[in-house]
Image 1 (tube, rainbow, N blue to C red):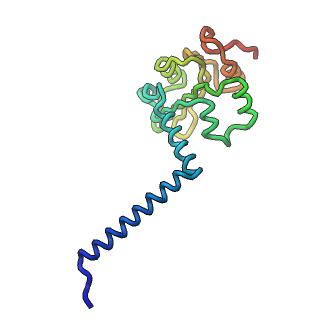
Image 2: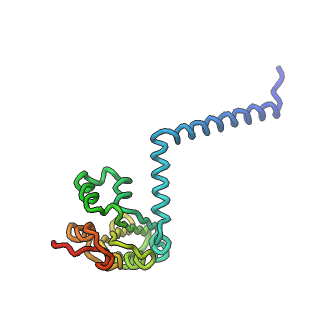
Image 3: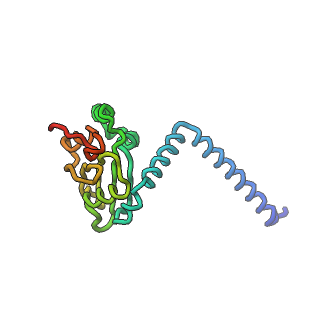
Length: 181
């Protein structure tokens, strides 16, 4: 019996490879058209928008390994299980879904503190309302805070500072309304 030539074996392997590649393309296209695929693409799009939002380059320049800027609304959508219906309702009722959330993560060594992050973001973007800052150093939270549009600290993320942020306010009040505690 005659052995197949190298060329014949090569043709068979190339044909099988091409069929495998076509099958993979069809499988990926089918997945991306499914509900799960569309959700994955939407999450990837959200991640890219958050990582490339205005001010993120300035935050990386001061030492944030990862700088993410999003809104409360997008953050609630991205991590649905972390927000109760009550929290969602309060944020939506206050019209605070568009409040920026600035997240800085430093993997090694120490990075900027929350006040420096807030000042850098405020200077780079000039937000029209108050915002939240979350600073993660390695595996632990470095600090968090609620800030006015001008980068003035209102305190750690908690009921009183959030109440002022959620109250909104005109630009002449630094993006926050005065709210009774």
